[in-house]
Amino acid sequence: MDTLISRAVTDLKHARTAVALTGAGISIESGIPPFRGKGGLWERFDPMEIAHIDAFVADPALVWRVLVKELKEVIDRALPNDGHKGLARMERMGILKTVITQNVDGLHQAAGSTDVIEFHGTFAWQRCTECETRVPTRDVDASVLPPRCICGGILRPDAVLFGEMIPPIALTRSQEESSQCDVMLVVGTSALVQPAAFMPVIAQQSGATVIEINPEPTPLTGRISKFLVAGKAGQIMNEILSEVSSLIQSKKQ
Ligand code: APR
Image (cartoon, rainbow, N blue to C red; front, side, top):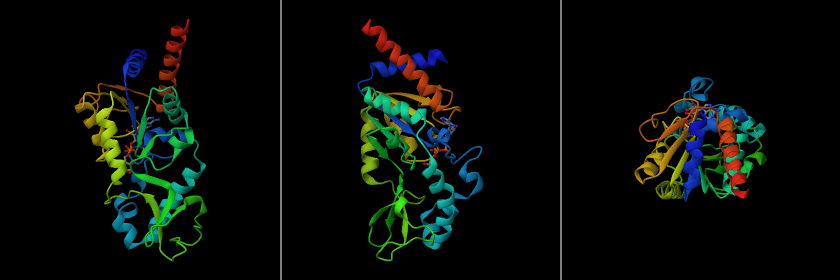
């Protein structure tokens, strides 16, 4: 393990620009379930029935009942963990430039990251399907489902549902950051959902070193990523940062 941590630290130390791509795995230690694998949301619900735009149009109350219960309430209680805090600290140290996240929980920003690309939108805001007005989720009265905008339109999460496009600015910026970085940390994603899972491919094809942090291998492992540091995001981030700090200390002496 230590050798892989040291390799990651060396790559980060020599990087002009490092970015991170994150997925649900980084928020598991904050109590938010993943989508796939053990305890995953899609083990209990068919995503095409509760997270596809056609399902929302067909029965917005059903989608709200499930999404609200399974996501909003869990996200409302969640706090950033050492994984999120580690990436925010790397940004403050000038090691990391941008976080591209597939997560809609806002925990990177809550941890202090300032340049976060929300590739799949956010659950922190709801948007009116009629007038496009955006409302903070915390201000939405979910006692009547589906909740309505003051214009009478149905409110929906400002997140990307299956069957929908990635927000153009998020897509363009992510492609730019992926093609211009020297190191990409891929943290807590199964790398199964496109086009997010293509960002590490863009990075690798542009000459960057792709490093995965995940307890399990993914389709990127051994093909796109240079190596996988197998473990939980919080623990691995702490090990990387403690090695970076001791490096900085030794330099001062
Ligand atoms: N630290 C880091 N990674 C972890 C941890 C942990 N503590 N625990 C599990 N993981 C890894 C799993 O091994 C898995 O590879 O996190 C990954 C979670 O994968 P998914 O649940 O598939 O989540 P994600 O890759 O973000 O899904 C992509 O799919 O359902 C859609 O829109 C949704 O953004 C989501 C997208």
